[in-house]
Image 1 (cartoon, rainbow, N blue to C red):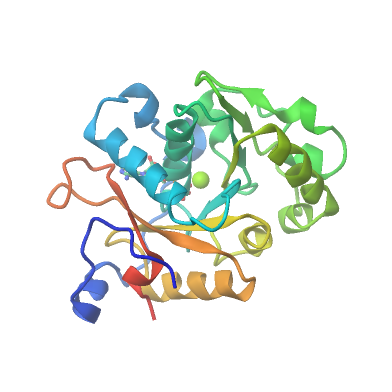
Image 2 (cartoon, rainbow, N blue to C red):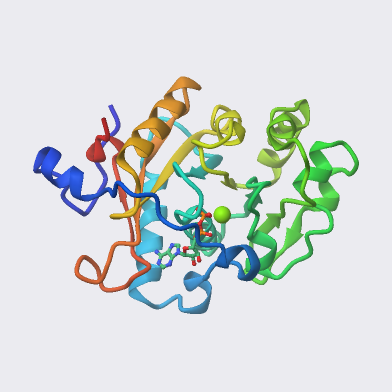
Length: 263
Ligand SMILES: Nc1ncnc2c1ncn2[C@@H]1O[C@H](COP(=O)(O)OP(=O)(O)O)[C@@H](O)[C@H]1O
Ligand SMILES: [Mg+2]
């Protein structure tokens, strides 16, 4: 049973749960593909929104007392729901605690980390997984102390195969020794098998759900897909809580997964 960790109350049954979702399919936001995502935890660390990312980080750290979380994956049901925004800011928050953190762009189809951190994407994860370079070549420092990144690398025709290859096990074995925490910015779970493959390998999975944007059926399907591969679901982050709920638009809230209970 996963503990409820949220500050928002999700009690009130299906009526409340229903309001969290939307039925229509939202237009895909491609802005972050060319400009990266906003790093509020870096640009404005003393702010309500950064505090919320800090509290998300703390809640994740304490969500699994019986298990040492060395690798965490962020996914969502569909593209453009805030996986990169949330995972990248949580990674910064984590690194600021003097932990050596490695943020990995595993969204090989819609990568953004090279744009967000302004680093080269000439060599990245796809190069390592296809066997052309070693790990030392693809780990890059960032402007944040203690935070390193692996970018996606050039677009590959077969991301699912690459992420399912033996080389990924080598990545886990080697980098878990060198870093306190590996954070995977993963693809959405419903469209392709990429995220499922990885979800089965990490210590914990966090599902990002955009408030009043996510599709209820889609979120329920995402939960089932994670359960199919016996992923350890740590919880849900409600992204894009609006001003009437929180002080800032960027607000993310972390909740015990079953608090949302999408059936
Ligand atoms: N909480 C938020 N507040 C405002 N904009 C957001 C928020 N979360 C995500 N976005 C915006 O939504 C778009 C998609 O976010 P992104 O993190 O790239 O999604 P994903 O990684 O799931 O594809 C980006 O333009 C990003 O800036
Ligand atoms: Mg992304």
